[in-house]
Image (tube, rainbow, N blue to C red; front, side):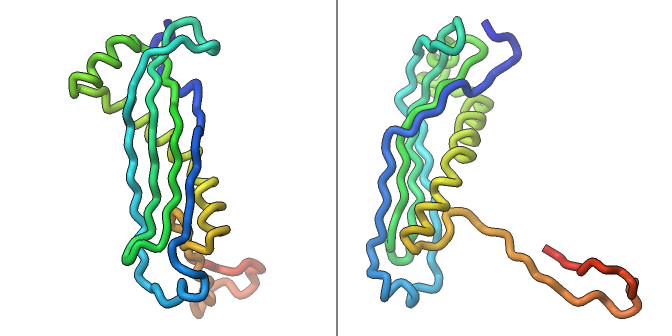
Amino acid sequence: MIKGNNMIIGFTINKIESARHVPLEELSKYKNINVNYDLNLRNLSVVKSPAVPEKVLRVEYTVTINYLNPSIGYIRFEGYCDHAGGDAEKAFKDWESGKADTGIQNEVANNMMVRITPLAMLLSQNLNLPPAVPVPVINFQKPEAGGAKDDKFDFYHA
């Protein structure tokens, strides 16, 4: 048994769906598009993994990114994530009885988002939808008066 080392040892995407419901020519008229995330962890099971000697907790997931106001498109991922460490049978029973370990939930959900976000960004770009996650905005500004005049680097604030 892995002691004190809870970790994700397997991640699989079984299905990806995406669509834009609005013709490309009309997309520019929608200015206030809300990007909504729907995350669903479900259908837990305890399975044998080839990666570790003990059984692991398998959590199926669905993540849907909806572009709303009005509904102009979506990106949906389905798959499963295997979590090792601790007592998988106990974690399964606790989760099924409504007492899920929030540490496991957070680890699974955050790992899942880290893995699907790059794919969601590519899909949103190819569908001409707004970015699936916020993109940092860079705002270059002139140096303040009285600053270092011989500095060869631009000052910027992100």
